[in-house]
Length: 309
View 1 (cartoon, rainbow, N blue to C red):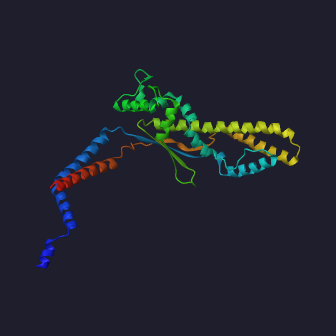
View 2 (cartoon, rainbow, N blue to C red):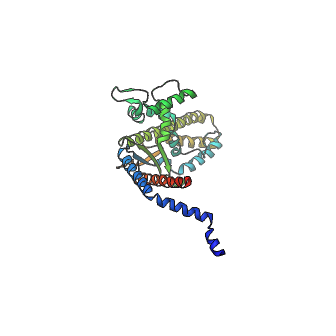
View 3 (cartoon, rainbow, N blue to C red):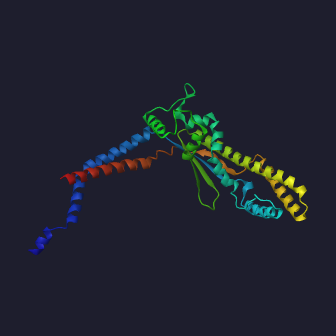
């Protein structure tokens, strides 16, 4: 009698699990239909979505910005201290590091903004190719964004895109990835709907950022040279004169390297390339997402119906 009673009184958790499995089994046809519907939706999306291509540029430090720079700067720092001048720090960033800082800067963005192709492509929602003029972006989403901007005081009325807006856009769409801290090779990628535009933008970005570092280095070295040439005639101590002459020679070499026209901060391992097939949307991920969503909806409906019962 007791054994029969204990068998009849089953564990509530066990009963719940059995009920859940039974409910899902009863809804198996609905779940299968929703999974198929999710797959069909994914296939439709893959055919109607605008494909996106990935442009990639591989960069490495320019030959004249090798790891020996730190050692030379350390020596110059000691000579500068002996000569009684400051400003040649051994721990300042390399030109390769400065390159990526300048690539994100507004100064470089302003240079790129002077290129109509870049502005008209990145802000194609505001460019009218027929009238060849700028216009406010159309659509409900654009109007909602404009309303929010006005409410928070960020912009009073619409204006054509500027270099500052280009800088913000580049920060979002251009990705910089370094494999490790010890490996200097750096990947710069850009996803775009316009396949031929990807390499063009990366090439222009490399040229402008490299040139910005070059101009900065030239200005610094020429400033040091002018100062050292004024200081040398005033120094009478032999050791200090030798130190100043060595520093002057190094700065003149730096000017020569910067004036060579070769890549100054970052060198391309190869020209920017773009994927031959679209990288977004990803077919497998889209289909898995569609099927998974259908499965989730089907199981959810089955459990909802169980709860109601």
